[in-house]
Length: 154
Image (cartoon, rainbow, N blue to C red; front, top):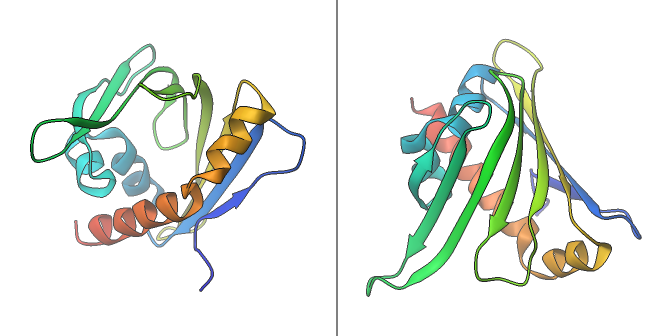
């Protein structure tokens, strides 16, 4: 089965381009990325901080039943244009991955449909290739499927 979220990674480049069309108005898609309680629902992480504004910061975390941290990520929001664009850094703590730069663009296709384009730049092609060895494409597709489901029911 073909994934709805497309991940494009050209050989020899330090970037990944992710695209997904949603059956959601652009304002709801943007809201899913900028409101903590919604991010928690579709990402499955606890949102410890989410300052959706220029120079804001965020911190996400997932723990197991024993309280051990399984995943922790943080970053700084550099550009924030409602319903259009977020530029941010992203760092997964306690992993071999360095900080990456992410450009998220939200595009209105129709009144009821929108497109998300995420352009991620890694420090090196080796870092990008290491990310692609993980179940990255399946994971982001599953998260986006959950986003669609949750935001459809709002």
